[in-house]
Amino acid sequence: MTRRFSRLRRILSCTSAGSALAALQLLAATPVAAQAPANAPQAIASLNVPRYMGVWYQVAWFPNRFQKQCISDTSATYRQRPDGNVDVLNRCRTAEGKIDDAQGLARPAGSRLQGDTLQPAQLEVSFLPAALRWLPIWGSYWVLKLADDGRYVVVGEPTREYLWVLTRQPTLSAPDEAEIRSFLARQGYDLTRWQAHPHTGSLKP
Image 1 (cartoon, one colour):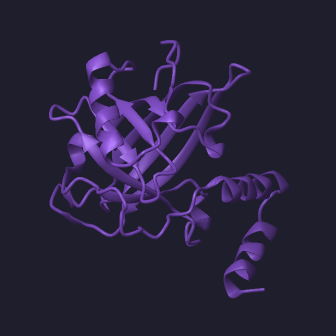
Image 2 (cartoon, rainbow, N blue to C red; image 1 turned 45 degrees about the vertical axis):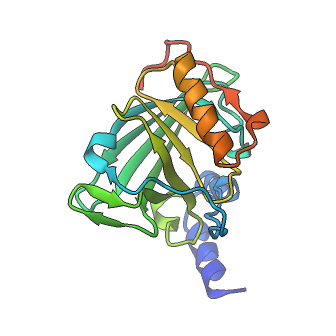
């Protein structure tokens, strides 16, 4: 057993059974940041972090296994921390009508924060418990396209396996969808995987 997983075993042995199970479920569900291939999509050159904070609504995505419980009303709330990292709160509604929350942390990855600006707009995110974030299990979060007025953002990662379209209002206009789809097609994305994500208006972030 490696030192890393020996340490994981010790941490889990000190938690309750429920906490340990939750930690292992998160460990299994968290996507691992991939090495960027030569033809990877490019993150935008810079991102004003304070302006990016607040509530975003997921209006389209490539469905994935770690959000499979979410059938509607998915939102992400970002709050910048004094250390420059970002607290993340994801919420959604499940098929049972329950609210599912996930708290995480985002930090710069392959980029640097200069004042309020991240260059380029590359972060990585973990939803593991704070005590387990030493593990190298962080998902890539690259801002690929941001509307001039900040009304929508396209988020992806190096392999094109995961994709999210987020908006400041829980709707995506037809012109914006067409513009985003055209952009993604040029970036080599398989748009047959595109799926709209509904919002009922009954779940407030």
